[in-house]
Image (cartoon, rainbow, N blue to C red; front, side, top):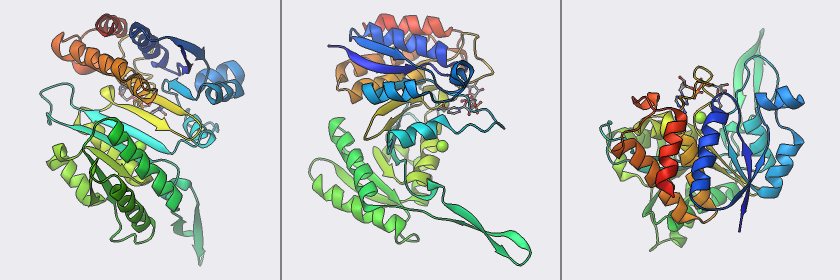
Length: 338
Ligand code: NAI
Ligand code: MG
């Protein structure tokens, strides 16, 4: 048995962290067939387009992609590849786990998985200005669209994720007190789905502004969280911040047509090519991919190996206060994962 995976090394530090991530995945003993494809600036340079058909075709075939960060050039007109992929494969769920790995931070016991709806809400981009008198841009208007089907799909994903991963609670985050329809619908559907899971996963709901405060006061009360697009955008970065920021934050984009796994951080042009980038976030994204394909034991071994290298072996890249290179870190994880 071999899993076919579309591999997109990406831009900047992407190829360096991807190389080490492939190395530790191979060390798990699972067989992979890598379909290496281009996207982003690397793709523009080679093919003239940021998201070549060959890349889309490969993902359509494998339905799984491990993607490095892509540089979005400022000022030139090409559309965001991440948005292109999101639309192409209907990537409706953005999943961002955050767990304390490095001790001694502000919070010791954070273990949160935030599930964000990724296609609806205020981010659909239906906006316009309304002219008043001489001012053509006197009023800005933006439309938020939330569908019953979209709410049901994302909340169900969160509860099913909780069951699959042995999680005890899902918190439905909303603003239904003010946004009685767009957020009210989400809460109504959320509570109905929660009922179906009664006895297996407990549930509660919380208003988003209170949630933001509770996250920094008592983050250990949260387990799985599910929310709409914009609230999820904001809260997912807050959640990453609780456990020390970008270097250890993975993400998954789950869709009807494919699932794409990546680090939350960008292409880090300031350190690209120097061999000092931290590959942990990309490796943790790979662990999420292993979970997704049902290789739970390999996922657990990979996470444990990363944690062992950082915490017990104290082998760390520069961003975590150490002096290990990307390749040294990769070698140490690969050795422990086997
Ligand atoms: P960034 O995340 O690339 O870098 C921010 C800071 O964190 C830099 O100082 C960088 O050196 C450091 N850093 C990031 N990842 C690191 C790692 N693995 N190890 C050690 N240090 C690390 O964010 P920035 O600079 O805002 O964006 C750079 C480019 O990346 C932009 O073109 C942006 O559009 C793109 N980007 C792409 C993303 C994606 O493809 N998913 C996500 C975020 C940004
Ligand atoms: Mg964001």
